[in-house]
Length: 109
Image (cartoon, rainbow, N blue to C red; front, top):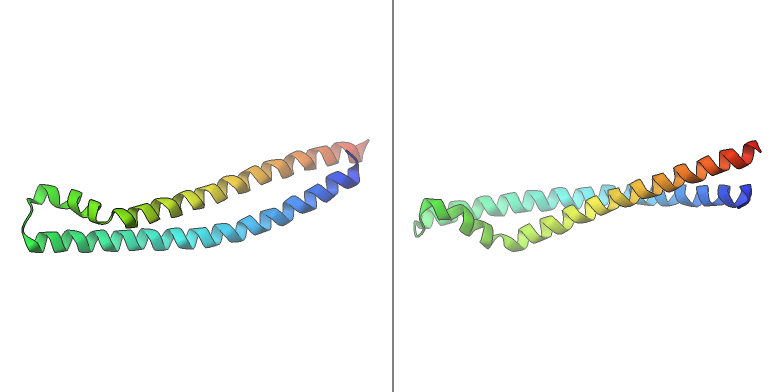
């Protein structure tokens, strides 16, 4: 690879890193909302089940979790999307580091 090709690739990766930074902000907000929504719905379900008095206290939390399963699924999806973005950013940074090392080596020769 030529120095120019490496420099071009470095610039492209830097742009991709910028995009992932924005995505992480968006995914982080989505994740925070999903956590808040799940916690709120779980709390409401627990209180509602306690007020109904139909179930033993030892089962209320388990039943409430089942009632809130769709919210938990959204939370897990938001969490995995957030973590995937961070992993992708980490991989890009590793690529960038590698290309920068190659660039320094080619530039010094």
